[in-house]
Image 1 (cartoon, one colour):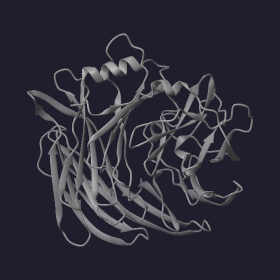
Image 2 (cartoon, one colour):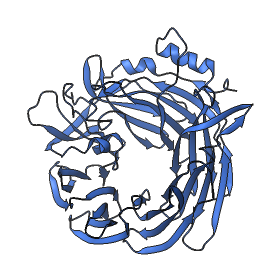
Image 3 (cartoon, rainbow, N blue to C red):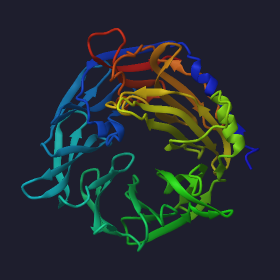
Image 4 (cartoon, rainbow, N blue to C red):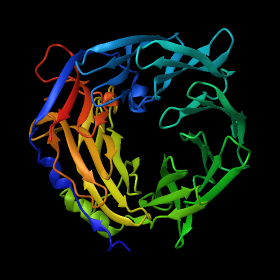
Length: 483
């Protein structure tokens, strides 16, 4: 089944560091207050920087325990304005997005006096930094499950969610849909089906305001996807069994990842395992297309002995490789439908001094018809103190056409730096990692903060890091690669 798929392994390339060639680096001093360990392990705000053009960007950072700041930087890398966002003692920042002319910051607040919790939104003018409005979006009892908000890709739509429970049973979600100006578009309730076993529910929203509810039921075996629009009460439902009995073997879902596109399609990837052994069995991929009311299934990618043998060879192992601690991390879709699914090995070492490790990436390429085209491995081995979590390791990606740009903090050939890789979605071909030339410190706990990294264009990135030879603390840089 796999013989028509191109197999490309990049393991050797990860030890060949390209020279940093022809880049311009503009920097400024920068500081931020370290987030909690839980926030660093599972960040609420995975992206704290948004591009405005090829030179300008806005950045949200925590400055004290009870205050954030939203700042705009320009060509000179000096703040054009800074807007403080003060928090109460029981208030946290839950979401951050860039809209067309404004930035949107959403906080979650608990009131001890009234025993309630609430979501608040603020909009800030991107040209001046002026706060335009502040509004309470949703309120619920404090003893309810924590209120949740989901934002569309362009920040123009959002949906607040209050999970409704009866005992330990999830019964539904009470939701309110808003536009970017914080006007109510729709109030509705998503009712859950009667079910046995656990239930996992997520709501995503697209730029048009349509909502997509994903439900994983029947002990993580059945996936249902419901699409709601704001014009009427029509609900479109598709569902598929991801687990169950296949070829007389019972399998279950270990991990799922969803990617919502703006053409009314939602992609779902799942890692499944064998019930008897607990071993990883395969990667499954499904496209739910609500334009045509059709589901398309990719050919199941089995982790066969031959596949594991190739991984073992790439890692210089004398025995067959054993997949463990593998998690789905990305589904990337180009405008013409080329697609890549990425998994990453991540774990916390045992023991009181155990470190967080982020290791090999497995990449699986598909064409616009979900036919598998190539798969590869990028070999890396990053580590960070437990107090830092994954805030500086793992990776960042950005897709430009069919070219995937990737940024990692690594030590290659004795040089600790940020390295860029370029991967083509059509073929899986990859260039050797190239050092940015920042020369990061390798003995600091906060050498790099990846949530402040973004691409201003295909050749320009931002980064917050600790230089190797500097007593000035952290630096915020804009790095532009010349053609």
